[in-house]
Image (cartoon, rainbow, N blue to C red):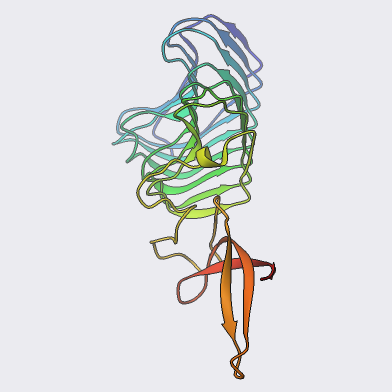
Length: 272
């Protein structure tokens, strides 16, 4: 911990070995590199091992090289097992990927994964790239992602299961083909995410089974909530026993799961 590292291809490389009670911590480091396609930090597990915990906390990472640099790169793929991964309270300024799980890591056996309370800026590809139905529980919460490239994704958690994506803030993205978040095929709880200086049409990418713009299609647990990021005022016609009708206006805030299934959560806005 507390290292200052400059212009390396891999600033810090961490390999966890086969001890489920082990704990590897990387914290309070400053890593700055202009090397092409470099990694600020690379976190991995030894081949076919069952490892304990890796924690990357309170690090300052700036990657300005050409190509495809990554601020924090998690090289944990199929055949690897990790009990706990925590990436929290880091500042990552990277011109390509901020925090990402390797391609092919969709089946990574990570029992508990927390990507929380980070600041990621200037990503041109993805701010937090965590695609795939990894084993175990995944939290992507309270992150601040800002100053994205026009073609970038702020958060890509498509096809991730057992996910809690709550309280993230995505800010400042110019026109382009990108979007603030991409959740196609994801399942879990989505609540309290906010978006500033981003066109409403580009908050969420359009894909199959997008849980934040349509009724969830999976079986939730009682109390699970899914935020609607495309609220539009609608009208419901109510008729009483005397055939008197009232046009009630409302905005759908999202969906909550009760003991039967998913129900709309509505906020009344007046009557027509």
